[in-house]
Length: 356
Image (cartoon, rainbow, N blue to C red; front, side):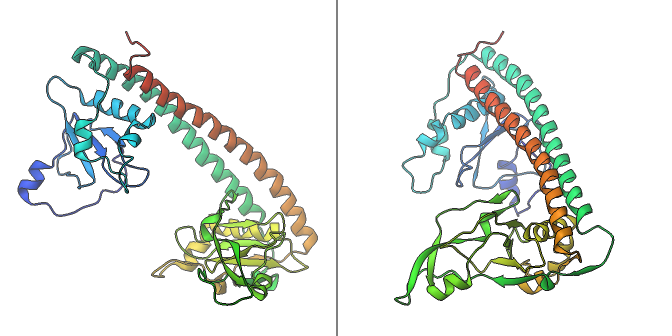
């Protein structure tokens, strides 16, 4: 159980605090929530001053049981989708206390449970240590990538200009779910969530647009799209191909480079500012953080001719591609380790793999 995150606080009556305490040997299970229900963790030490909310179920093992085994058995059941099957009939899936109490797990004698728990604790601890080192490597590679981009763009010496002098900056259309005119078409649009650091993640989101709006909000090769508001404000991508028949919503900023600008270079400048923290500074103090199109227009960029911009963009394409290839390899190895961890727990809990 990860206690490194900042704890939340709420009021408890004195008797409730005593009843809802957490002690070494307890197992806690997530009761509800899309994608989260059924997650289980073992409490390895007493947690004085901690309680738990009503979306958490506490299992307190008796003297013949072992909380570690319960946690491993529930992790196995979630990995093999048994918990999902137990919650299928609910409109909003919940692994309620009643369902947990009735839930069947593989039976082992007390001594075998302890032996299984000891073995899995040791093996998963080693796998988790490897996963932690991989996460550190990923963080280091991402930091290296950001540094390469910053040094070539926003941290370089020389004269700077503003984004508005090299590109036309526009905000997208407010989502329209109902048809209002005969000349409107129901078309796909790029939304803020589509824009991720690694590129576009498109889905089938549609809204109504007139023919004129399809021209006004079109998307072309070289356009830079920036998330305007929400948790991902400042994320950006550059389009590598035209997107005929698509538009973009009002939480997305389109930066269309003029003839004296390279869209890839402009995108790297935005990414450089994102990594350096300037975009955070520009939105600081807002009730709802957002990089408005007006603020985006004022982003400083190196004042270079288009040939120099293209040369830098080509260099950064190659440099970041090398880092991305390493990140992909680490992600592949990490996925294999996670799969190995899940399979090991299930094999041991179910008895397919015997432990000495």
